[in-house]
Length: 288
Image (tube, rainbow, N blue to C red; front, side, top):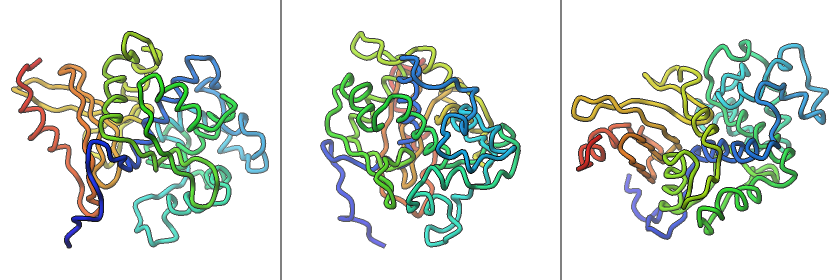
């Protein structure tokens, strides 16, 4: 099928970065942590959201914020099904009138902290806590604490289709150069233009391995960041990444001071990490 003409690509075109939005949400939580506003990561999620106390069980009261950040929450959740399937939890989340209630009412399949299970519901619950902690919508908080300090002005962040709440797990639209700025912020340990925008300790903690990303080869997962390794001239290099469906990629290779942004419209085929390994890194003229 010819996909040409369906999506525009240009330096000034905002592109749907899909689940890289999750990684941006992690940066926002870091901003709230730096101001002492976000609850302790070891604290219980349901305790911080008493408006959903009717959903409390002896099992889900064990879910802490760090379980949501590492998507090791233990909730029964499946995003692998066809988008047309009513069994796709991501679709149900997107269309829910109360997406946070939908997330919390899912049954517990495993004890929290046991296993990686990719989930937009986890990001959504984090965003609910974030909005409550900072006292404003997360898109407004993002503009003030993250985008404006980096000179990012052309932004869209869409809401759930069934709710007026911001869909933190997806739907953020940025120009490629602005997404690259976020990658450079990570590469520079939270600094931008001589200013410490985010705590270096948050960048370090959120981009270190916390859980094996089961079913994804040798990848690990931090706080909403993918973590992997590649070889360049026989040297093993670690990288940090945000992944979004359709081929959206943000790679940060600290050892090379390298930030790579990929925007695509390929929802049929998996965009391999080979785009970094085979095309980009071999073109780096100044090696580590």
